[in-house]
Image (cartoon, rainbow, N blue to C red; front, side, top):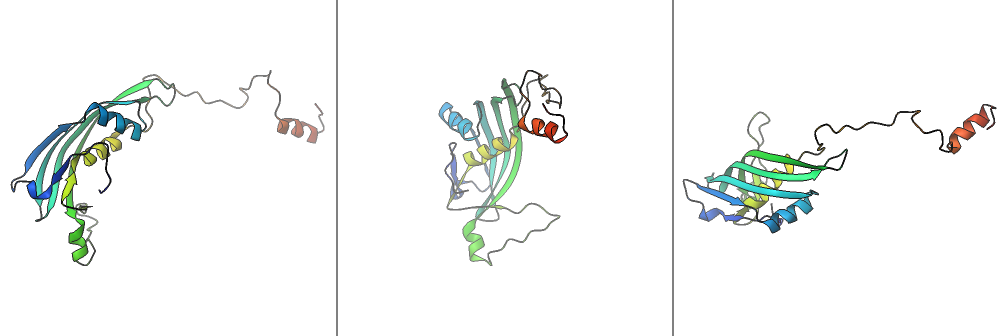
Length: 179
């Protein structure tokens, strides 16, 4: 997580209290506009995060909480605006990348156990980037307004006023039917 995101709320690992701390924030209009453009949305009306950040295994962090947002995007059928409320619960663990490099460079993964920790670089973790990523994960990839239906064009639905395709003409010639 080394990229700079439109929504940035870094927290220093050393600033987190031993018993943890609550971090809550809302994206401002400029941040929401930049994220909407990045996610190809019409708009993001609101975006808020409420996290509990705690130390994890010494120099790592655990982040648990909720990200909520209201987004607007075009309907895949009618292009009318579709409003969606996103609420994503999360529990993540982060370990400094330097800790992995100092060891054997591997993280043991138990297929039946918990997910391995995410890696971060530096002395801080960007909670804004975490919130933005979870909003992106919650976006409906095929939004539809209620009642919108796609009516596929069936073969034979072509209007008779249209000129026949060159391939149809060749097929008739091949069969000996002429035009």
